[in-house]
Length: 222
Image (cartoon, rainbow, N blue to C red; front, side, top):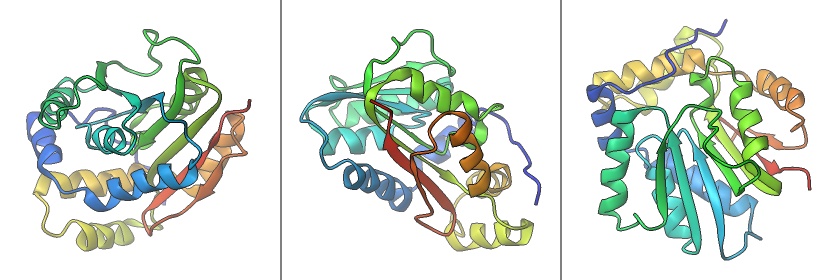
């Protein structure tokens, strides 16, 4: 099945409210566990950038698990960031979780200024997927941890519909529609391999931790 791109931003009031209230426990917990499992030697303090942070659930989870770290969440959606700020305040983490309204690449951030770069479910939204990989290389320091996860495109629309029925049967209509469209806009594992090669990141470990996700983890060259 050919890829069917979707809009870069999912930032309507209806969408942001649905995402802020949705239960992404399984995928977000998987992502956070993957970070801690892949990089068990992370130091006690550091700076992490989360690209496409959305409502900041992953930023909050990481901050809670790495209490000595400062987290910078970056997102281009103003409404989504408003929800994110509310969540960060509710978690009492406003001193350690900073949120930025910006598109990638973000010229307001210093090059090679982060010890870790994470991103979950941003890549399939970007007009040019290399924007994410190049931003990770530019923002990360030599040896920085990199963890990126996203959906992988199913074989056909019937499989996409099955995944929606399996994992979003009780979700609001707007989330079901976004999930379906995101599956059609996602990249295949072979396409991700090509992107990593073009970015000089072919050494990252690429795996498929679920029936609908791929995950790439590793470190920037020292």
